[in-house]
Amino acid sequence: MTTVLILLLLAIGAYFVAVLEAWVSKGRFQLAAPLFAAIALLGRESILPRKPDRLFFEVGPVLLLLSALLAAAVIPLTPNLIITDLATGALFINAAMVYVLVALLMAGWGPDGAYGMIGGWRFLGQLIAYAMLIVMPLTAVAMRAESLVTTQIVVSQAGLWNIIYQPLGFVLFFIASMALAFLPPFDMMIAKGELAGGVEAEYTGMRLAVFRLGRLVLIITLASAIVIFYLGGWQGSGLPPWAWSAVKILLVTAGMLLAGRFMPRIREAHLLYWCWILGIPLALANIFIVGILVLEFP
Amino acid sequence: MTAQMFFIGFFGLAGVWFGIVVFRTYSMVRSALALLFSQTALGAMFLSMQAEFLGVLQIMMMATEMSIMAIFMVMFMMDPGGLGEMDMTHQKRLSLGVGITAFVSAVAVAVFVDWGPLATTAPDAVQQTADLGLELLGRSMLIFETAGVTILTAMIAATAVAIQPVKKASCHES
Picture 1 (cartoon, chains in turn brown, blue):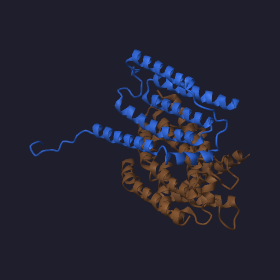
Picture 2: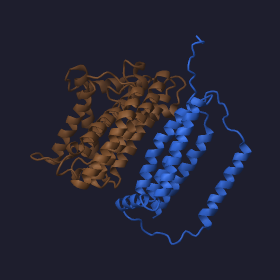
Picture 3: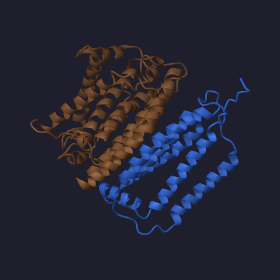
Picture 4: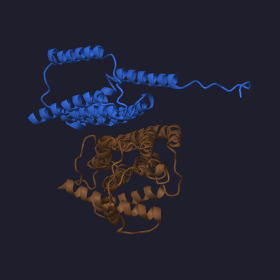
Protein backbone atom coordinates (compact mmCIF):
# COMPACT_ATOMS: atom_id res chain seq x y z
CA MET A 1 0.00 0.00 0.00
CA THR A 2 2.79 2.42 0.98
CA THR A 3 4.65 1.49 -2.20
CA VAL A 4 1.64 2.28 -4.38
CA LEU A 5 1.07 5.57 -2.57
CA ILE A 6 4.70 6.64 -2.93
CA LEU A 7 4.74 5.70 -6.62
CA LEU A 8 1.61 7.78 -7.10
CA LEU A 9 3.15 10.71 -5.26
CA LEU A 10 6.31 10.38 -7.36
CA ALA A 11 4.20 10.46 -10.53
CA ILE A 12 2.40 13.61 -9.36
CA GLY A 13 5.72 15.10 -8.29
CA ALA A 14 7.31 14.33 -11.66
CA TYR A 15 4.38 16.03 -13.39
CA PHE A 16 4.87 19.15 -11.28
CA VAL A 17 8.59 19.13 -12.03
CA ALA A 18 7.76 19.07 -15.74
CA VAL A 19 5.38 22.04 -15.33
CA LEU A 20 7.95 23.91 -13.22
CA GLU A 21 10.76 23.20 -15.66
CA ALA A 22 8.73 24.57 -18.57
CA TRP A 23 7.75 27.58 -16.47
CA VAL A 24 11.36 28.30 -15.56
CA SER A 25 12.88 27.74 -18.98
CA LYS A 26 10.15 29.09 -21.28
CA GLY A 27 8.49 31.54 -18.92
CA ARG A 28 5.02 30.10 -19.49
CA PHE A 29 2.95 28.39 -16.82
CA GLN A 30 0.93 25.73 -18.61
CA LEU A 31 -0.59 23.10 -16.39
CA ALA A 32 -1.60 20.75 -19.20
CA ALA A 33 1.54 21.05 -21.32
CA PRO A 34 3.40 17.95 -19.98
CA LEU A 35 0.28 15.85 -20.57
CA PHE A 36 0.10 16.89 -24.23
CA ALA A 37 3.86 16.48 -24.61
CA ALA A 38 3.61 12.94 -23.22
CA ILE A 39 0.72 12.04 -25.52
CA ALA A 40 2.66 13.45 -28.47
CA LEU A 41 5.75 11.42 -27.53
CA LEU A 42 3.78 8.20 -27.08
CA GLY A 43 2.04 8.70 -30.41
CA ARG A 44 5.28 9.27 -32.30
CA GLU A 45 7.17 6.52 -34.05
CA SER A 46 9.93 5.04 -31.93
CA ILE A 47 12.77 4.82 -34.41
CA LEU A 48 15.45 2.17 -34.07
CA PRO A 49 18.84 3.39 -35.26
CA ARG A 50 20.94 1.40 -37.68
CA LYS A 51 23.23 -1.19 -36.02
CA PRO A 52 22.33 -0.39 -32.40
CA ASP A 53 23.57 -2.26 -29.36
CA ARG A 54 19.98 -3.28 -28.89
CA LEU A 55 20.28 -4.44 -25.28
CA PHE A 56 21.86 -1.19 -24.06
CA PHE A 57 19.56 0.91 -26.22
CA GLU A 58 16.46 -0.61 -24.61
CA VAL A 59 17.79 -0.94 -21.06
CA GLY A 60 19.30 2.57 -20.72
CA PRO A 61 16.11 4.64 -20.24
CA VAL A 62 14.49 1.95 -18.07
CA LEU A 63 17.56 1.74 -15.82
CA LEU A 64 17.51 5.54 -15.39
CA LEU A 65 13.91 5.38 -14.20
CA LEU A 66 14.61 2.34 -12.05
CA SER A 67 17.58 3.86 -10.22
CA ALA A 68 15.60 7.00 -9.37
CA LEU A 69 12.71 4.85 -8.11
CA LEU A 70 15.03 2.66 -6.01
CA ALA A 71 16.54 5.73 -4.35
CA ALA A 72 13.03 6.96 -3.56
CA ALA A 73 12.34 3.73 -1.65
CA VAL A 74 14.36 4.84 1.38
CA ILE A 75 13.11 8.44 1.53
CA PRO A 76 10.62 9.09 4.34
CA LEU A 77 7.86 11.59 3.54
CA THR A 78 6.34 11.24 7.02
CA PRO A 79 7.61 9.14 9.97
CA ASN A 80 5.64 6.17 8.61
CA LEU A 81 5.38 6.89 4.90
CA ILE A 82 8.51 5.12 3.68
CA ILE A 83 8.80 1.99 1.56
CA THR A 84 11.73 0.44 3.43
CA ASP A 85 13.67 1.97 6.30
CA LEU A 86 17.04 0.37 5.56
CA ALA A 87 19.86 0.42 8.09
CA THR A 88 22.10 1.81 5.33
CA GLY A 89 19.56 4.28 3.89
CA ALA A 90 21.89 7.19 3.14
CA LEU A 91 24.40 4.88 1.48
CA PHE A 92 21.64 3.14 -0.44
CA ILE A 93 20.44 6.42 -2.02
CA ASN A 94 23.98 6.94 -3.19
CA ALA A 95 24.28 3.37 -4.50
CA ALA A 96 21.05 3.69 -6.49
CA MET A 97 22.09 7.05 -7.90
CA VAL A 98 25.38 5.69 -9.27
CA TYR A 99 23.32 3.62 -11.69
CA VAL A 100 22.19 6.88 -13.30
CA LEU A 101 25.70 6.92 -14.73
CA VAL A 102 25.43 3.33 -15.94
CA ALA A 103 22.05 4.15 -17.52
CA LEU A 104 23.44 7.17 -19.35
CA LEU A 105 26.49 5.22 -20.56
CA MET A 106 24.20 2.49 -21.89
CA ALA A 107 21.80 4.97 -23.49
CA GLY A 108 24.71 6.86 -25.00
CA TRP A 109 26.56 3.81 -26.32
CA GLY A 110 23.49 1.84 -27.38
CA PRO A 111 22.29 3.68 -30.49
CA ASP A 112 25.72 3.63 -32.19
CA GLY A 113 25.72 7.38 -32.76
CA ALA A 114 28.56 9.83 -32.11
CA TYR A 115 26.45 12.45 -30.33
CA GLY A 116 24.87 10.00 -27.91
CA MET A 117 28.16 8.31 -27.16
CA ILE A 118 30.02 11.55 -26.43
CA GLY A 119 27.07 12.65 -24.27
CA GLY A 120 27.34 9.44 -22.26
CA TRP A 121 31.09 9.77 -21.74
CA ARG A 122 30.62 13.40 -20.77
CA PHE A 123 28.44 12.26 -17.91
CA LEU A 124 31.21 9.93 -16.78
CA GLY A 125 33.54 12.93 -16.61
CA GLN A 126 30.89 14.83 -14.68
CA LEU A 127 30.48 11.94 -12.22
CA ILE A 128 34.19 12.00 -11.38
CA ALA A 129 33.70 15.69 -10.59
CA TYR A 130 30.58 15.54 -8.43
CA ALA A 131 30.73 12.06 -6.84
CA MET A 132 32.90 13.05 -3.88
CA LEU A 133 30.67 16.07 -3.23
CA ILE A 134 27.72 13.72 -2.78
CA VAL A 135 29.51 11.26 -0.50
CA MET A 136 31.49 13.62 1.72
CA PRO A 137 28.63 15.94 2.77
CA LEU A 138 26.55 12.80 3.40
CA THR A 139 29.31 11.55 5.71
CA ALA A 140 28.97 14.73 7.76
CA VAL A 141 25.18 14.32 7.87
CA ALA A 142 25.54 10.72 9.06
CA MET A 143 28.12 11.83 11.64
CA ARG A 144 25.62 14.16 13.28
CA ALA A 145 22.79 11.61 13.21
CA GLU A 146 25.19 8.82 14.27
CA SER A 147 23.25 6.68 11.83
CA LEU A 148 22.74 6.00 8.12
CA VAL A 149 19.01 5.35 8.65
CA THR A 150 17.12 8.10 6.83
CA THR A 151 14.38 8.48 9.45
CA GLN A 152 17.06 8.81 12.14
CA ILE A 153 18.76 11.50 10.08
CA VAL A 154 15.52 13.48 9.98
CA VAL A 155 14.93 13.01 13.72
CA SER A 156 18.50 14.17 14.44
CA GLN A 157 17.55 17.58 13.03
CA ALA A 158 14.71 18.17 15.51
CA GLY A 159 16.60 20.93 17.33
CA LEU A 160 18.38 22.53 14.41
CA TRP A 161 18.17 21.75 10.71
CA ASN A 162 21.35 20.67 9.00
CA ILE A 163 21.16 23.60 6.58
CA ILE A 164 22.09 25.82 9.56
CA TYR A 165 24.25 23.24 11.35
CA GLN A 166 26.37 22.47 8.27
CA PRO A 167 25.63 25.09 5.59
CA LEU A 168 28.81 24.31 3.68
CA GLY A 169 27.73 20.68 3.25
CA PHE A 170 24.32 21.84 2.07
CA VAL A 171 25.75 24.09 -0.64
CA LEU A 172 28.11 21.36 -1.88
CA PHE A 173 25.42 18.67 -1.83
CA PHE A 174 22.97 20.98 -3.61
CA ILE A 175 25.41 21.71 -6.43
CA ALA A 176 26.41 18.05 -6.70
CA SER A 177 22.74 17.01 -6.85
CA MET A 178 22.17 19.40 -9.73
CA ALA A 179 25.12 17.85 -11.53
CA LEU A 180 23.80 14.35 -10.80
CA ALA A 181 20.38 15.22 -12.22
CA PHE A 182 22.13 16.87 -15.22
CA LEU A 183 20.18 20.06 -14.67
CA PRO A 184 21.41 23.29 -16.22
CA PRO A 185 24.17 24.49 -16.01
CA PHE A 186 25.47 20.91 -15.83
CA ASP A 187 23.44 19.59 -18.77
CA MET A 188 26.17 19.26 -21.37
CA MET A 189 25.13 15.65 -22.03
CA ILE A 190 21.53 16.30 -23.08
CA ALA A 191 21.33 20.01 -23.88
CA LYS A 192 19.65 20.88 -27.15
CA GLY A 193 22.36 23.32 -28.17
CA GLU A 194 25.11 20.79 -27.46
CA LEU A 195 25.57 17.65 -29.58
CA ALA A 196 21.98 17.96 -30.88
CA GLY A 197 20.60 16.57 -27.64
CA GLY A 198 23.50 14.24 -26.79
CA VAL A 199 22.25 11.11 -25.07
CA GLU A 200 18.68 11.97 -26.09
CA ALA A 201 19.65 12.54 -29.73
CA GLU A 202 18.84 9.07 -31.06
CA TYR A 203 15.81 8.42 -28.88
CA THR A 204 12.28 9.05 -30.06
CA GLY A 205 8.73 8.17 -29.10
CA MET A 206 8.10 5.78 -26.23
CA ARG A 207 11.77 5.30 -25.31
CA LEU A 208 12.35 9.07 -25.11
CA ALA A 209 9.23 9.35 -22.95
CA VAL A 210 10.66 6.80 -20.50
CA PHE A 211 14.02 8.59 -20.49
CA ARG A 212 12.42 11.97 -19.76
CA LEU A 213 10.17 10.46 -17.08
CA GLY A 214 13.23 8.90 -15.48
CA ARG A 215 14.95 12.28 -15.38
CA LEU A 216 11.90 13.98 -13.83
CA VAL A 217 11.68 11.28 -11.14
CA LEU A 218 15.42 11.66 -10.58
CA ILE A 219 15.01 15.40 -9.96
CA ILE A 220 12.15 14.92 -7.51
CA THR A 221 14.00 12.12 -5.69
CA LEU A 222 17.12 14.25 -5.31
CA ALA A 223 15.06 17.21 -4.08
CA SER A 224 13.48 14.87 -1.49
CA ALA A 225 16.96 13.67 -0.50
CA ILE A 226 18.08 17.28 0.06
CA VAL A 227 14.96 17.86 2.18
CA ILE A 228 15.55 14.87 4.45
CA PHE A 229 19.30 15.42 4.77
CA TYR A 230 19.35 19.19 5.29
CA LEU A 231 15.87 20.68 5.72
CA GLY A 232 14.50 18.59 8.56
CA GLY A 233 12.31 16.32 6.40
CA TRP A 234 8.72 16.28 7.56
CA GLN A 235 9.39 18.47 10.63
CA GLY A 236 7.72 21.84 11.08
CA SER A 237 4.89 23.39 13.02
CA GLY A 238 1.35 24.28 11.95
CA LEU A 239 1.05 21.87 9.04
CA PRO A 240 0.78 18.05 9.01
CA PRO A 241 4.08 16.22 8.28
CA TRP A 242 3.16 15.20 4.72
CA ALA A 243 2.34 18.81 3.86
CA TRP A 244 5.70 20.01 5.17
CA SER A 245 7.46 17.36 3.09
CA ALA A 246 5.51 18.39 -0.02
CA VAL A 247 6.12 22.11 0.44
CA LYS A 248 9.83 21.68 1.09
CA ILE A 249 10.35 19.28 -1.81
CA LEU A 250 8.57 21.63 -4.21
CA LEU A 251 10.57 24.62 -3.00
CA VAL A 252 13.88 22.74 -3.33
CA THR A 253 12.92 21.55 -6.82
CA ALA A 254 12.04 25.10 -7.84
CA GLY A 255 15.36 26.24 -6.38
CA MET A 256 17.31 23.61 -8.33
CA LEU A 257 15.57 24.55 -11.56
CA LEU A 258 15.89 28.31 -11.01
CA ALA A 259 19.54 28.20 -9.91
CA GLY A 260 20.70 26.94 -13.27
CA ARG A 261 18.71 29.37 -15.36
CA PHE A 262 21.02 32.31 -15.00
CA MET A 263 24.32 30.51 -15.46
CA PRO A 264 26.25 29.53 -18.57
CA ARG A 265 26.79 25.80 -19.10
CA ILE A 266 29.87 24.41 -17.42
CA ARG A 267 32.07 22.03 -19.37
CA GLU A 268 32.72 18.81 -17.48
CA ALA A 269 36.48 19.43 -17.57
CA HIS A 270 36.01 22.79 -15.86
CA LEU A 271 33.60 21.27 -13.39
CA LEU A 272 36.19 18.59 -12.67
CA TYR A 273 38.81 21.27 -12.03
CA TRP A 274 36.66 23.28 -9.64
CA CYS A 275 35.24 20.28 -7.82
CA TRP A 276 38.67 18.81 -7.12
CA ILE A 277 40.57 22.04 -6.48
CA LEU A 278 37.88 23.76 -4.40
CA GLY A 279 35.00 21.37 -3.72
CA ILE A 280 36.80 18.42 -2.14
CA PRO A 281 38.93 20.53 0.25
CA LEU A 282 35.75 22.36 1.29
CA ALA A 283 33.95 19.04 1.80
CA LEU A 284 36.85 17.77 3.94
CA ALA A 285 36.75 21.02 5.94
CA ASN A 286 33.02 20.49 6.38
CA ILE A 287 33.59 17.00 7.81
CA PHE A 288 36.23 18.43 10.17
CA ILE A 289 34.02 21.33 11.33
CA VAL A 290 30.99 19.08 11.80
CA GLY A 291 33.20 16.63 13.73
CA ILE A 292 34.14 19.37 16.20
CA LEU A 293 30.54 20.63 16.38
CA VAL A 294 29.22 17.13 17.06
CA LEU A 295 31.66 16.78 19.96
CA GLU A 296 30.89 20.22 21.40
CA PHE A 297 27.20 20.83 20.60
CA PRO A 298 25.52 17.53 19.66
CA MET B 1 16.21 -20.38 5.20
CA THR B 2 15.32 -22.08 1.94
CA ALA B 3 14.44 -18.76 0.31
CA GLN B 4 17.77 -17.40 1.49
CA MET B 5 19.63 -20.39 0.03
CA PHE B 6 17.71 -19.98 -3.23
CA PHE B 7 18.67 -16.32 -3.61
CA ILE B 8 22.31 -16.94 -2.68
CA GLY B 9 22.45 -19.66 -5.32
CA PHE B 10 20.58 -17.56 -7.87
CA PHE B 11 22.81 -14.51 -7.53
CA GLY B 12 25.89 -16.73 -7.38
CA LEU B 13 24.98 -18.31 -10.70
CA ALA B 14 24.13 -14.89 -12.12
CA GLY B 15 27.57 -13.66 -11.07
CA VAL B 16 29.25 -16.62 -12.77
CA TRP B 17 27.13 -16.18 -15.90
CA PHE B 18 27.95 -12.47 -16.26
CA GLY B 19 31.59 -13.39 -15.68
CA ILE B 20 31.38 -15.75 -18.67
CA VAL B 21 29.63 -13.05 -20.73
CA VAL B 22 32.69 -10.80 -20.19
CA PHE B 23 34.66 -13.10 -22.49
CA ARG B 24 31.87 -14.04 -24.87
CA THR B 25 31.32 -10.55 -26.28
CA TYR B 26 33.41 -8.57 -28.74
CA SER B 27 32.20 -5.17 -27.52
CA MET B 28 34.45 -3.65 -24.88
CA VAL B 29 31.60 -1.69 -23.29
CA ARG B 30 29.45 -4.81 -23.06
CA SER B 31 32.38 -6.65 -21.57
CA ALA B 32 32.96 -3.98 -18.91
CA LEU B 33 29.28 -3.73 -18.01
CA ALA B 34 28.96 -7.53 -17.87
CA LEU B 35 31.75 -7.46 -15.30
CA LEU B 36 29.80 -4.75 -13.46
CA PHE B 37 26.68 -6.88 -13.33
CA SER B 38 28.75 -9.86 -12.20
CA GLN B 39 29.98 -7.73 -9.28
CA THR B 40 26.47 -6.42 -8.65
CA ALA B 41 25.31 -10.03 -8.37
CA LEU B 42 28.01 -10.53 -5.72
CA GLY B 43 26.60 -7.50 -3.90
CA ALA B 44 23.15 -9.07 -4.09
CA MET B 45 24.68 -12.25 -2.60
CA PHE B 46 25.91 -10.20 0.35
CA LEU B 47 22.39 -8.81 0.73
CA SER B 48 20.96 -12.35 0.65
CA MET B 49 23.41 -13.27 3.40
CA GLN B 50 22.06 -10.35 5.50
CA ALA B 51 25.29 -8.37 5.21
CA GLU B 52 23.47 -5.20 4.23
CA PHE B 53 26.28 -2.65 4.46
CA LEU B 54 28.74 -4.76 2.48
CA GLY B 55 26.12 -5.51 -0.16
CA VAL B 56 25.10 -1.90 -0.71
CA LEU B 57 28.75 -0.81 -0.68
CA GLN B 58 29.70 -3.43 -3.26
CA ILE B 59 26.79 -2.48 -5.52
CA MET B 60 27.71 1.22 -5.24
CA MET B 61 31.47 1.02 -5.70
CA MET B 62 31.46 -1.32 -8.66
CA ALA B 63 29.17 0.85 -10.80
CA THR B 64 31.66 3.72 -10.86
CA GLU B 65 34.72 1.54 -11.15
CA MET B 66 33.48 -0.58 -14.03
CA SER B 67 32.18 2.47 -15.91
CA ILE B 68 35.60 4.06 -15.65
CA MET B 69 37.12 0.80 -16.82
CA ALA B 70 34.75 0.86 -19.79
CA ILE B 71 36.08 4.21 -20.99
CA PHE B 72 39.67 3.02 -20.62
CA MET B 73 38.89 -0.08 -22.66
CA VAL B 74 37.24 2.06 -25.34
CA MET B 75 40.26 4.36 -25.39
CA PHE B 76 42.97 1.72 -25.56
CA MET B 77 41.52 -1.27 -27.43
CA MET B 78 41.69 -1.47 -31.21
CA ASP B 79 38.09 -2.48 -31.79
CA PRO B 80 36.06 -1.11 -28.85
CA GLY B 81 32.66 -1.50 -30.49
CA GLY B 82 33.35 -5.11 -31.42
CA LEU B 83 31.89 -4.63 -34.88
CA GLY B 84 35.02 -6.16 -36.44
CA GLU B 85 34.63 -9.24 -34.21
CA MET B 86 38.29 -9.14 -33.40
CA ASP B 87 39.44 -11.79 -30.93
CA MET B 88 40.93 -10.09 -27.89
CA THR B 89 41.93 -13.21 -25.96
CA HIS B 90 45.34 -14.84 -26.01
CA GLN B 91 47.31 -17.58 -24.21
CA LYS B 92 44.12 -19.62 -24.02
CA ARG B 93 45.61 -22.88 -22.75
CA LEU B 94 47.59 -21.18 -20.01
CA SER B 95 44.63 -19.08 -18.85
CA LEU B 96 42.30 -22.10 -18.92
CA GLY B 97 44.77 -24.06 -16.80
CA VAL B 98 45.24 -21.22 -14.33
CA GLY B 99 41.49 -20.63 -14.16
CA ILE B 100 40.65 -24.27 -13.47
CA THR B 101 43.42 -24.62 -10.87
CA ALA B 102 42.27 -21.47 -9.10
CA PHE B 103 38.67 -22.65 -9.16
CA VAL B 104 39.51 -26.09 -7.78
CA SER B 105 41.71 -24.66 -5.04
CA ALA B 106 39.05 -22.11 -4.06
CA VAL B 107 36.45 -24.88 -3.81
CA ALA B 108 38.92 -27.02 -1.86
CA VAL B 109 39.54 -24.20 0.61
CA ALA B 110 35.79 -23.64 0.98
CA VAL B 111 35.09 -27.32 1.61
CA PHE B 112 38.07 -28.57 3.58
CA VAL B 113 38.91 -25.67 5.87
CA ASP B 114 37.44 -25.85 9.35
CA TRP B 115 35.49 -22.62 9.57
CA GLY B 116 34.51 -23.10 13.22
CA PRO B 117 30.95 -23.07 14.49
CA LEU B 118 28.37 -21.63 12.08
CA ALA B 119 26.60 -18.43 13.11
CA THR B 120 22.92 -19.25 13.39
CA THR B 121 21.69 -15.67 13.47
CA ALA B 122 23.21 -12.50 12.09
CA PRO B 123 23.14 -9.33 14.21
CA ASP B 124 20.68 -6.74 12.89
CA ALA B 125 21.87 -4.43 10.12
CA VAL B 126 22.34 -1.33 12.29
CA GLN B 127 24.51 -3.30 14.71
CA GLN B 128 26.51 -4.76 11.81
CA THR B 129 27.28 -1.29 10.45
CA ALA B 130 28.45 -0.12 13.88
CA ASP B 131 30.54 -3.28 14.38
CA LEU B 132 32.14 -2.86 10.97
CA GLY B 133 33.06 0.74 11.76
CA LEU B 134 34.71 -0.27 15.04
CA GLU B 135 36.53 -3.12 13.30
CA LEU B 136 37.88 -0.80 10.60
CA LEU B 137 39.15 1.67 13.19
CA GLY B 138 40.55 -1.03 15.45
CA ARG B 139 42.18 -4.32 14.60
CA SER B 140 41.94 -3.97 10.81
CA MET B 141 43.01 -0.34 10.57
CA LEU B 142 46.61 -1.04 9.63
CA ILE B 143 45.64 -3.51 6.89
CA PHE B 144 43.13 -1.14 5.33
CA GLU B 145 45.38 1.89 5.52
CA THR B 146 48.21 -0.11 3.94
CA ALA B 147 45.91 -1.27 1.15
CA GLY B 148 44.60 2.26 0.63
CA VAL B 149 48.04 3.85 0.42
CA THR B 150 49.24 1.07 -1.91
CA ILE B 151 46.33 1.66 -4.28
CA LEU B 152 46.92 5.41 -4.21
CA THR B 153 50.60 4.90 -4.99
CA ALA B 154 49.72 2.57 -7.85
CA MET B 155 47.27 5.11 -9.27
CA ILE B 156 49.79 7.95 -9.13
CA ALA B 157 52.46 5.71 -10.65
CA ALA B 158 50.11 4.55 -13.43
CA THR B 159 49.15 8.13 -14.25
CA ALA B 160 52.77 9.19 -14.27
CA VAL B 161 53.64 6.38 -16.66
CA ALA B 162 50.67 7.11 -18.92
CA ILE B 163 51.27 10.85 -19.34
CA GLN B 164 53.41 11.66 -22.34
CA PRO B 165 56.42 13.77 -21.46
CA VAL B 166 55.94 17.28 -22.78
CA LYS B 167 58.92 18.56 -24.70
CA LYS B 168 59.54 22.21 -24.13
CA ALA B 169 59.80 23.94 -27.47
CA SER B 170 63.29 25.24 -27.82
CA CYS B 171 64.08 28.42 -29.76
CA HIS B 172 65.86 26.46 -32.51
CA GLU B 173 62.72 24.60 -33.51
CA SER B 174 59.78 26.27 -35.24
